[in-house]
Image 1 (cartoon, one colour):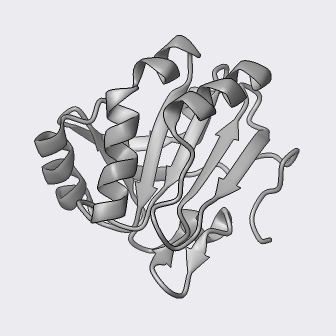
Image 2 (cartoon, rainbow, N blue to C red):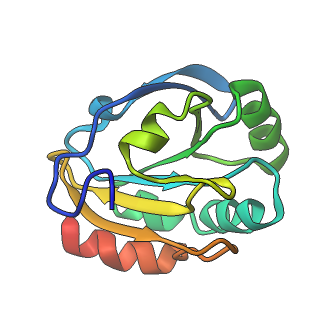
Length: 154
């Protein structure tokens, strides 16, 4: 597996993104001191990704209750993210990685769909504490399962 393994320092990054209509640059390092859930997904408004990110929206309180920040990353541009986020009312940030730099740094590039559906949980010190990669279909860990992991790493 390329990219950081459990126990490794998470590669820092800065990506353009949008959160509740606010467009800005987001850096992983700005969230030090609290856990971060990085959710890599293949594409905006696609069937599988819609199921995944809507589940995060619908159970968003599990991330809030854990004191965790959720950042969702895909290769689409900020305009695409903003349109989808506005339509679906996502309370978390969607980050644009059109050059695949962060996707490659985390070892989640896929020759089939561009990005392997992957979730990394990073602790308050910036260390990867958990990692899961789903299959080609919409296989992902639901928010309640992620909350159980967050309980162990926070």
